[in-house]
Every structure is written in C-alpha cells, then in structure tokens.
Length: 229
Image (tube, rainbow, N blue to C red):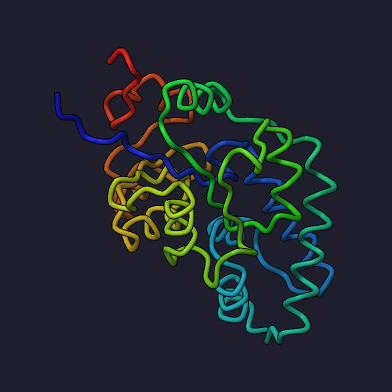
C-alpha cells in the first residue's frame, strides 16, 4: 500500500513549548533601561521572536535613539544575562513534553528552531528535557538571518532530512507564521505567546490552537498520525 511520508513538525521554542515570552520581555526592558532607552513593555512584547537586528531597527524607529553595533552588542549581552537570571522560573507550557514525546513515539520527525541564541536557549531546552545531541535544534547562532526570514525553519528541515514543503511550522508569534510562509511550509499558531487568533491567521496560520496540549488533542487533524491511525 502506497502512503505519504509523515509530516515533520518544526517548533518555535519561546511561547510555543515553554512559557517564557514575558521573561524575555522583562529582560529586554531591563537591558534597555540600562542603556537609558525607554520603551513601553507592550511594544517590546510585540517584537519578541523577531531577529535581534530587526529589534534594533524597531528601537531606532520607536525611540529615535541610534543603535550602533557596540550598543547593540551591549543590549544583546544585557538581555541574555537578565533572561538567564529569570530562567529558573520558566516552565514547559501545558502538554509540551507530552506532545514531543508522542511525536517521538510515533516516529514523526520534529525539530526546534528558535530566534534565541544557545546561551539563552540552552538552559530552557534542558528544563524541557530536550537533548540537542538527539533532537535537531537550530538557534540564531547557526543561521544568517532569523525570523521573519525563513532561514531557521529551512535549516531545521534540512537537519531532519525532509523537504520544507512536507513540514509544518508551529509557533506563537506572527514572525513564526511569516517565516513559515516564506519557507513554503504550513503554519500552525498557538495562543500561548499572547498573539490573537486573528493576528496569527492573518500572518498565515491555517489552524490555531490554545497551547501544545490543545494541539496534541487535535494532532490527527494537522497531519500527525501515529502508527495505528
């Protein structure tokens, strides 16, 4: 009997598998305050998940303060330090561990692609129980451009050895959905990062779920089929 290969799932990390979006927001606020840059928390939240370079462009537009290369590096390091101090409070989102365990048990390929660098993603991956030696993980350190460019997801699909067109991106932000569209992959949005269903759908999500637990309950509807299905 002929059959199609299983759909591969490419997961964002922050706000998708772990409840860490607001720790990132507060870490960025602390870093910005340290440089004397005032930016409302809600404006920071709307940019979580995009690349650091784009974040600097946004800061320039919204604060009117020039961000040169040296200042951008100070901000990046200050954010990483502030975030890592908060990382002990971060927990997996409901159903995250169960979802990836089910995919593994069902021999469905999956990977993680995050705009974060390994210096911040590493402790969170360990808390989630993900071993980068066994699970393909693509961080900002490994690609030229981050979201909304498609590089992270293209690299993750390549690590899995599957065509990007056979992959589904799962993310919580419009930046994930825009990157999925540019990569020619399907996009599934989760509400666990603070974006609305309407925003995620406008950015390209063809389905939206509350969190990983909700996605797992409907996994057969989005191409996730175990051996007995």
